[in-house]
Image (cartoon, rainbow, N blue to C red; front, side, top):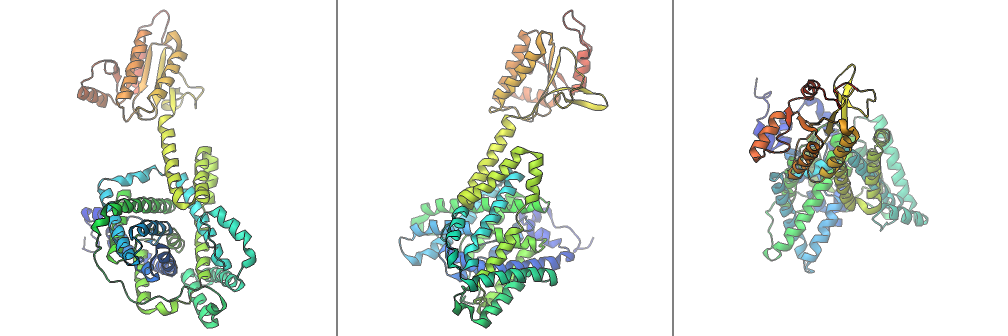
Length: 576
């Protein structure tokens, strides 16, 4: 095996998974990644300018935030599609956190924001060592799809004012729609014409120039037309002047007198930016059928924010719209982000002049088209057929974005995920088992009404760990099964294979069941995990109740042992 084909060292893959993936790069992906990278840059340039103003910075700082952070994420991230950069939610949070700390001194805005960004990066890296990225594992596919559908609508309706040429002050989707509907008479028709023309360019480019990024073609043509016809003088909003040159690199300086305030603010920025990024990263990973490492993603976000602080700019997160553009343009690997970063750097060096002529309405048209690619109606249909509960979760996640906004919808999504987790584990499926002709093993009587059972024998399966919050439910269902079996009950067999965990409350509950069975003259029998149960009991010094129960390695052996019992007058083992 030569050096070129040798796989990267495992330690490199753990430390810098993105770099390890790039070392295994397939040349066949290059045209797709270049096209996607140029498309991302075409959108990231004007978006960076707009979001910089939202965060309280000069426009050029939004472009600075779109170069080094992209490189850092490409080296340390595990998502193939995710694009990091200025994000509306994070920028708004930065502005809200920094303004009170400046004491009214505008000169402090930049150094405090840079220090905040650097500390948020360190917090994310620390969280990765503590493996706190596992919080993202609570976000199920219905919630991810619902959130992504809501973000799609959020992006779409957020561009209406720019397309029609009048300001929209509202932040929530419903309020935006009402405001737009009430101000349609203020439509600036040249601006709307530019937006509609850009939609036509996007469609034509995708059809007749499929090898070129449609977003880039549309924005270049729109900028050229804007410059040639002097659209800015006719009231069409444009990006405006952007100074040239790359950012000067410097270490962030933390004002010690504001350290305690900065820690709390940076923790908030880290939490919001990570949660937002993970929702985006997990959504696109699910769409493209691969897995991401959440702990490495936390570290990658930390590295991206440290890179942003080094470039003297503000905090970044996963960018929904630019990630959607990368995915829609066919981006396959992390090289997409590197191409986008290189393109933005080249524009900063050589092309800031032409950038000023790009109409804001043309950018809005590109974002609307990207947002439509996020809508996943097919999965919504599948959820409707598969599970009414999951379908409802998906709709609630979407409505959360619509009614309370993307920031608060993150909290809604997390709460929904926790509710789903509690519902699944606190009220798991409980099954009474029997044998089915033609099928090996034991199966639920509920799903197989014709299953064979043994008189006096109950086989009970609890499909979850037995812990404090579901132990009362376990006891309730076990007692119901015992009551239904009646006085003929001789053995109550518990299948412990699904019981992957048992805390002290769960163990005490098993003791109560065992004691009740002894009072009735029946036996408490344990089947499965025989070695684990005995080792666990010995380690805990337990020797009564459950531990004293009869143990069998499998359900089959437990049933055979029951059938071998001597018959009694009131309870004869026989097939029911």
